[in-house]
Image 1 (cartoon, rainbow, N blue to C red):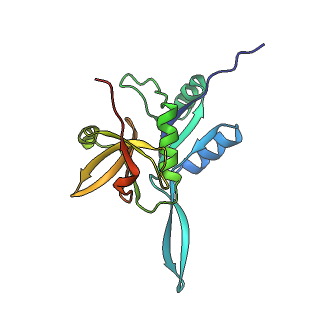
Image 2 (cartoon, helix red, strand yellow):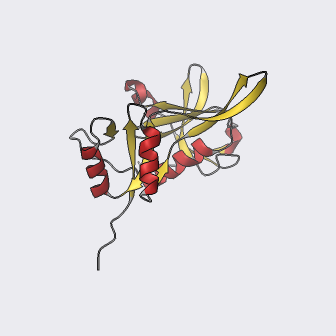
Length: 180
């Protein structure tokens, strides 16, 4: 009897406009994938059309076992990067972090903006952790930071991406007490 391998979330950066091909192949192999999408309006032919577009065009998440992700990284090294540790080992994403990221990026709230992680991310780690207790993002945990004179609720997948949400009333937030 074969042991079932544990599946974890991993983040992929797919290059050369191959994200849709890789996503389809993963889904055909029955792996769960997630790409943060948003609706945008565009004026075409005299009418407004709504289209789904990726928040970060080349970022894809897949839930699979470690052996599969290592093989994928090896087979597609020329157009795919698997986020991981400095030594190159693929790093699984914490299940709770991924749940919160999916909740925030798939909610119908209009104030969501996702950014790929940059060198300036360290400044966002400061601040008190908070939980959203009502509204679209109820249950999400993150931190509140001031960015360009505006307060934002930030959710991060460390080393991969950060989500900044601006339209959450502060009455919907509660501070999470941390152990010192």
